[in-house]
Length: 245
Image 1 (spheres, one colour):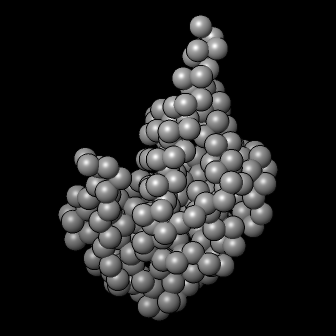
Image 2 (cartoon, one colour):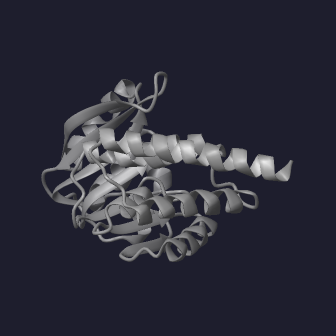
Image 3 (cartoon, one colour):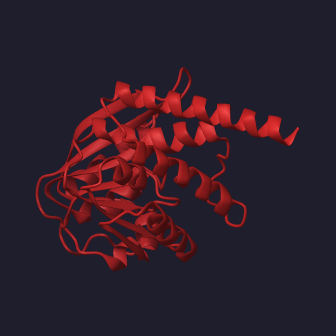
């Protein structure tokens, strides 16, 4: 019975890998064998660590590959990954920046998270995957980083857009972009954030809607930084939350 179950697990995993490859082909991405092994290690390590710390509510392999790995890689619809500096705000278990780093190794990644246990998890993960050019910071973004500095800033399911805008846009360098990953019902949030986007030197460049499957639609709001942000922003988080721009 154990052998039979192991065979079922093997074939199920093989099907997931095949599906993942086909989805990446639609994005014109060609992963190497090494990259596929890195994603497999990422999945296994995430599941292992999730038994002792709350990293993800998604635990089925198919769902992790779809809702974490593939969803992260859809960011290539917002920019072409090359050797840019990318700041990932509130990355949690490494999404979207670690899947991007696996697939596009020349990206220079900085991840900041307020929970030290997540940074410790990511430190172990980066070493396990053999990734270079990844900086991990434990702290709050408003206290820890150089402003007007990163070519790309990303945030995935962190906060409402009017709060995210002040937390993220000040750290984008002029001519860079901030990409907020949202669900498809983002219109109200975007309307509430428009004044803050303008005040902080940004303009909404595009809104990308994409589907992970027949029922799951997500969106990316791409904001271009036109001019440096005043150094008084971002304010302390409690002020941002209490009185968004």
